[in-house]
Image (cartoon, rainbow, N blue to C red; front, side, top):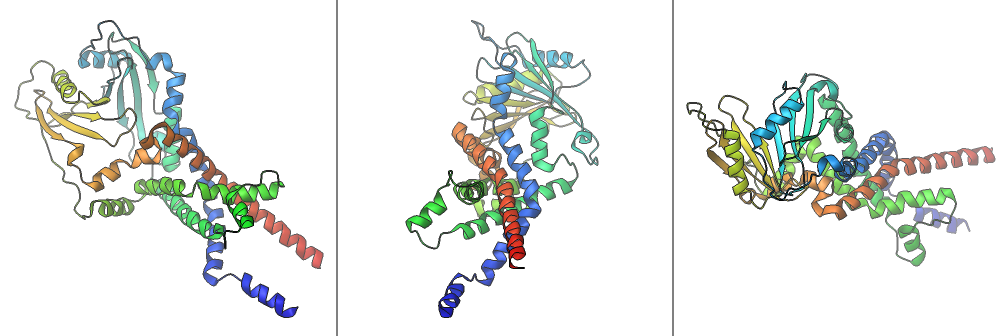
Amino acid sequence: MALTKASTKSKNKKSRLRRISDWLHLWLGIASGLIVLMLGVTGCIYVFQKEITELIHHKEIFVEVPSNPKTLPLSVLQANAEKALGNKKKITFVSAYKAPGRAWELGVYKPGDPKAFWYFDSIDYYDVVLINPYTGKVTLVADYKYEFFGVVKMIHWSLLINHPIGQQIIGWSTFIFVFLLISGMVMWWPKNLKKSNFDKSFKVKWKARFKRVNYDMHNVLGFYVMLICLMLALTGLVWAFQWFQTTVYVVASGSTTPPKVVEVKSDSTKTITAIPFDIAFEQAKKIFKNEDRIAMSPANGGSATIYATGYRGKETFWNYDVLQFDQYSGKLLHSANQSEKNAGETVIGMNYDIHVGAILGLTGKIIAFFASLIAASLPITGFIIWWGKGKKKKNTAVAES
């Protein structure tokens, strides 16, 4: 009998590497748990921000299309938006939509103290005006500095901290989460695929006691979303660490040479004719006739240029072309097309759309939502497992004494 027990004990004994992995999984999970919980919850909330916003502000976002759907000049809409803001702020960006029943967005943004510790102090103002492009009527003025989803995004981004330490906390917690996903997979991996082990590893025993259900939710649900959570975490690391973004670029492009930056300037000796912003926009509409939306940025003095960005996709941001126009004449000076980008630029450009699931449309956003929800639950279910084991050891010790 003694030999049998010793043999069983020997078989069940974990390797040193496995014991170290289990120990790190426990304590790193406890150390990063609150941040991972926060990232999961804010990620869930933000995924459907577009749908929720359109539901709440449906009357302001969607407008009636006239029988002769001709939009007003962009400069007129710009003037109306600035008037709605008290004529004290100049429009810095415009989003014009191809969809005929959609209000256009005109916004103003001014940074605050660049050395401010908190997010709210780093912005002087950030306002967005929704306007009917056919009538010029303002349908909504929103303060985006305090807008709900904007605040949620900044909590997710840096805990509302403007100092680099905010992203460092998020970044290293995410890095730890990647390790937890991999080590969790190692701990979950069944020794063999007998039916009993299969059920234990791939199914949640919902009718069992709470302790077992909690254990299954941590292990089984964690397994099912592991690859999705890994993708969400890795795309998050692209923003958190420059070295990680550079690594992704080099691996995808096969080159250590950064993308070429072309410097374009307006000719300040030219005399302003008509309204260059309108001229630039009309040219952009002709060039971007198949794009879903056009983003316009007025020139900011000196030799700066007017920017026009044409996005393909109603919600994604990776597939776009950029035009630059002379701010004095409205003449097209330069174009940069998506087709000219290398694989590294394309992958980095896709990062946001992958992170929020929009790259796969509504299906991708639903997947990202549930993956984030389960990710948020893992620190809670993991803590309950650890707490339960601690109580069991304590009760065993008391009973033996």
